Image 1 (cartoon, helix red, strand yellow):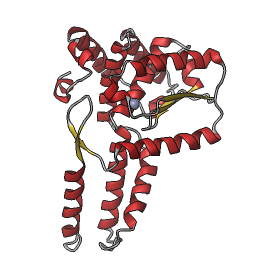
Image 2 (cartoon, helix red, strand yellow):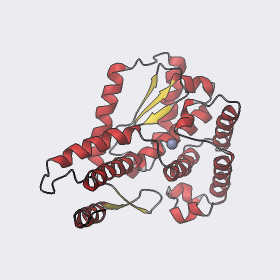
Image 3 (tube, protein in one colour):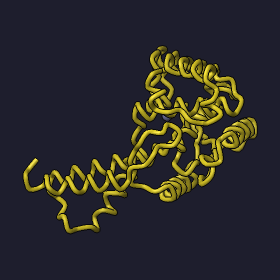
Image 4 (cartoon, helix red, strand yellow):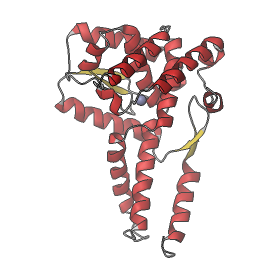
Length: 272
Ligand SMILES: [Zn+2]
């Protein structure tokens, strides 16, 4: 790093880190995000509209009824402070891939291939949906947008391509960050958090948590057979993840206060 650029980086990163540090929902750690809650909801809605404009939706009630009903039960089981302020919607895309994803607005997309993979089983469906809902309320997209934007800013600063006085470029970095972030997989840490908070929600909505263990086993076996479902590209399953989920289920059965309080501090999760 050249001596000329280094002094520019320190104030920029310090400003970003200190001005945007925030307490994490549910896990009670700290994180920093450069996107407000209303901005992430707006960005999610914009992406949802684009997807709905070009993708074909499944309207067959044999698929949509169970999806909408399960989704409604899960969203209702969220404490109001985590439920309010999002635009909760679920859609089934007419696609054969075994896949699902969530946007930060609360718009969740399931692929028909995933419903076929789990044979429309409500408990397994609830596992997938609760995991995706967890990514939303944990603000994982805002974290990804932040990391991607900072990486881009840092990269350009290092290449000495930004005149420090040019503030108009900030918007451009941000847009690049948003585009990159939506394509980025969640980090391993974010996946662990979504597994844990997804399980809290499964318990609260009255679903059998063993279905979560069963679903991840099914994914792991599909992978072992050399037919990795699409969801694997962003949700790598393994014996390790399976063991973690089993331990979480046992822990929550023995400590139901975490379910009623809907909290799972990071320091508790780390011990599992
Ligand atoms: Zn995930």
